[in-house]
Image (cartoon, rainbow, N blue to C red; front, top):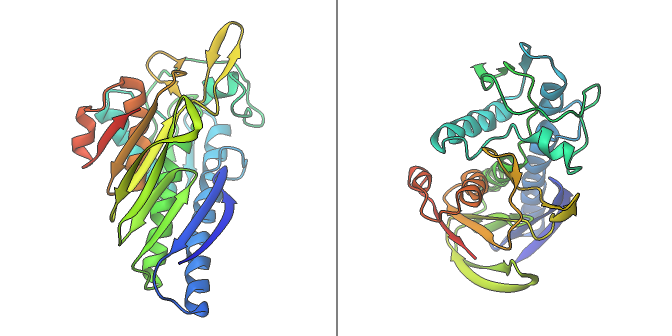
Length: 275
């Protein structure tokens, strides 16, 4: 087994190769996998003003913005899950996260918290997004999983058959079974459970590392989109799915609903559990 790690996507991304590859083959695979990760990071970073998401957030309502096909894929998936979940997954929560100091305000924008009103963005083509309302997007709750999927695809083009890509707990296993540990949400430096994954992805969302008190309220980086309140309980929400993009995004639906049997899971061939 060979393993490499690099910082990206706001976390440490680790790629593990389990095939019997020589040094030239393994280095080529690592380069391809990390290149895929960094490409998604550069396209969809909330913090980078020149990313697709950065340019969207600075644009005025009504603007038509050119975007990469990867960004269009993620925005289309986010819109689909928003509709299927009845609004329990919504990437238009960035204003709330800015107000709570979890994200920096986009340059040239005000930091006033505004409720999400108006029509959601539309995608007139595979390379454009139409911004209908004065909203800010944060795709961190779905794009990290998508980046993992892209890295797995890149490894496969290099002939890799057995691997794992782990982006801070959003991970996908290619090929042979791997045991994955899950933190105890009440004691996050301890492990509470473990699962075995074979050609599957898994993601976990929880508030244990982001939870903080402010003005007598407990806040976290998990936002309930329908109420605008923080999800700051001592639970963790784990989803297993064929694709990491859906595992990543569906953890927010489970966190907001508190329902490990939410009907959305079936639509995306996923399963969930709450600790």
